[in-house]
Image (cartoon, rainbow, N blue to C red; front, side, top):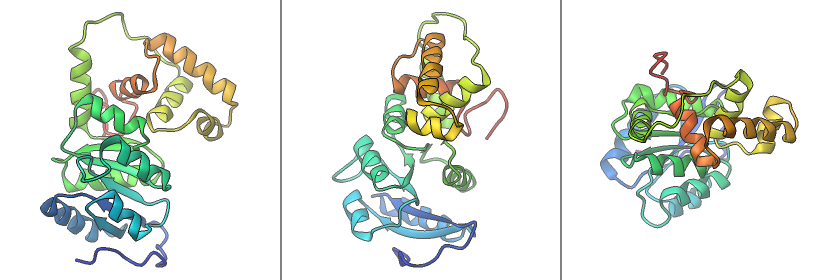
Length: 230
């Protein structure tokens, strides 16, 4: 299969540039085949490491399917490096422990899927991330929710206002305070005021804890079993 389309090729309206960084040959070929058959995908670089990804100069703004167990730069460091190139990272990994998921999202990943995800959900996640949303597969969310349930309960869940939920959702999607302010059309100080209230209500002081809280509350794509949302 062709490893990369020309960076100068125009992408038809409604199509999404997608690249793959995956070091397992069989899985890489399977994902490439799924993407090549998707009408809305413009397939870009398909490589086995972040170093090789740099060589191909994938156009910024692409959705990058990223494994975490890579040779060379790996894990959250790989997420951060690809995000800094201007891409939207969707992690697809066999490593789905809560701390791994939270670390990847804190580094800037817009979504996280386990490797047993089916083709339909993979494509839904790509569309969601390309559209500026965040997506965590039900399997991954379930692991985080179980981890949370295994901890001693401290108090009843405090209800968040609709605006607080918006802010928390954007935090979980990796947005900075200034970006949240721009997206919602409010001041940075106002955003930080909402974050202070969210921290008071949830007891979570740090960004990774807020990400976990957003997943637990079903505020990321595919994470709300209470509403049957995908």
